[in-house]
Image 1: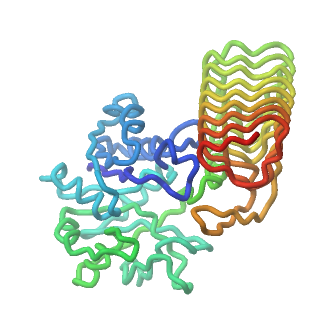
Image 2: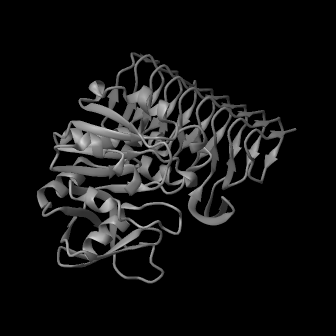
Length: 404
């Protein structure tokens, strides 16, 4: 069986991190979300993968190439204009000629391998939708079902219809393409695969449902990456590939450290923590649970990091404090940097108010922060910003902002 992964969208609600990469390339436990999806398919012996790409497609293609390094065979199809999930799937039609059945799934949802096996063992008919039961259904597509038969798919209903959420993972047959052309344009100006499936239901075709209790997690906003990261790190095992752990460094619990990384004397690291390759940590740095650090990162002495994601090629100078934060690639954080943290925050994003349960800050790529800078809780700092020393940042900074 082949799989079609939809990976063409930007992920507007994950800005500023998606200003320079698509949502599928956001890192969870030092690997792009899309890599976790591909791994789940490979673990179920689904190795022929068609990636529908569009926004920032070069990053995806340069990273995954032909898929051989990931144990799969990848081909690419471009969705030149992002007109919805049904339109994206239609781009795969010519590549699926002769295929009677296939899987379709999103590339920006973290999944475990068991999610795929739960769908495969329960598939039936022409369409099977994978659902999860969840208490909070706001913002998701909800399924109304009778037994395993789907009666209706409702996108973001205003009232509580059901606790069954559509994961966007489907078993499909080639019959789906007969109905994509009948898909109505949504109020958002897109052609949604859920509308295609609703059209099939109305035409009398039986659409079934499977459920899973395995991990399916969606990063709706950039700060949701912290939850995904924490869950994923909770499953890692202790794995230290570096032989440059100096005497006096204390490492406790499930900690993964990549090749050529130096952990200097006096460092205190408590897992689950993941540190990539070619990093220089310490001396006397503190790294606490649910933190992932990418490749080519330096963390100087007396800096304290917890529950955070530090992407590749970041330099963090001494005496800093980072908590519940995401730092984009190629950033320089000066000495005595502090992030405040708060809960139940109201954050304005794309001129709309959104809730964050707990957050320090989100900093986009290529941002330079000077000495003794304090960032208030929940503040989003965009890409290519420059913050001079001694500032308190209490308002969101847009792309290319200079703070004197």
